[in-house]
Image (cartoon, rainbow, N blue to C red):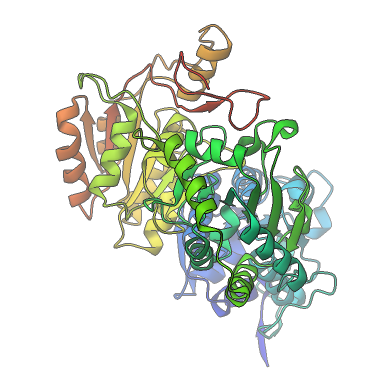
Length: 574
């Protein structure tokens, strides 16, 4: 029998669970845990400079590896600083376990120093939450937390631990629980075979089918199965923002991202389709535009691990609840068993129409200008060229995010990391750091803007301490670009507080933090400077790129329209 304190149990459990990294910031309520962590050499703790960055680092780690990221924060402001990152993970179904300190249990509810109701505050943005009531329950509770975070539809779980639960003077029996015991939680482990067969038959009979794949395919490790099905049936494939990379972005059958800033081809193909195979996607508002006009002639097959997501926004004709990998595996087997190929003439006709929409313009055409100024699109295309499309790319939120997802070709899953649901500025840098820590030999880029990067720029200090040489691609247009774009299009160019009239010298700022800074203002310098930056394998390089201040992101769906209703430029619309 091994006797451990509550604090030692927390740390020992994390070791036994195989956790390699903890992202956190110490404070009074968690000092017992930090003391126990001091003695544990197999777990690396990353001391961030702000708790929000800890959650985003854990988030980036989780998106790239599929494993739950672990966060450790103190009570009160430490816990509340983590809220934005928890909400980010919740909206995008990212597995995370957040351990928050709490005031001693006999002081809970007394407005004690640094007390906040972390369970209450986080309740709407977690998959589940626990408060430790006795030290002996720590191993079982933590096992449940990891199981909940990583299974079914993944998400963040909070464990709130009062300080007296980690008292080093009180010892209890510790046994690592091999299984989580949760009576009321049993996510589906396979889909309904009858429904899967119906779906396969409907796809085979379709005249204008399309696959609409989302982040669930990435997190569900189903990219191989999705690609096999698409190839078997010669189906066009479109991805959501979160799904990019689950199908090779450079493949002929990929018609681009869909939705608000999706490709002309993808949005038209969706609108005119007769069967939509939706896999691990939730029909969110940034995809469907107006629900009343969404794909009026299409039958919907919807595969998702979360039954609450099916028919929530758009009614599914064939709902299938189950893990996307097993459902697609069974669907592929059924298609092979049926042995009936789609009608060749019908398939050819559908592809002829799609290729006409795609034309000679490519997925996202843009005016390249006369070369006197750097277009943000060109900067992303150069990033893709220099990294050969192999980089892990994290982004912040805004125009730069949309340019990144439009012009970087993601051919593998788990390579694109961004805050899709919550839209969190400040996400990009710490998320990239979380990836670089786990994949030190990979190229890791953070695509950002001068507004977003300043949200968590203090993490440049963390990068130096832990040797995290990410490359920062700052598309600097001197404004909150997406806000300014909306003000251009909707508010008659009344730029209410969207221009940043005072900006730091980012080169000097990067150097002050001990890194390399480069300023790029001339298009001819873009490629050599970017190549130079990525050649510096052991240095963080901040590329401050002056880009066209007037550029907009297109296409852009027209509010309350159908998927086919888009602005194609400032003056042209469908």
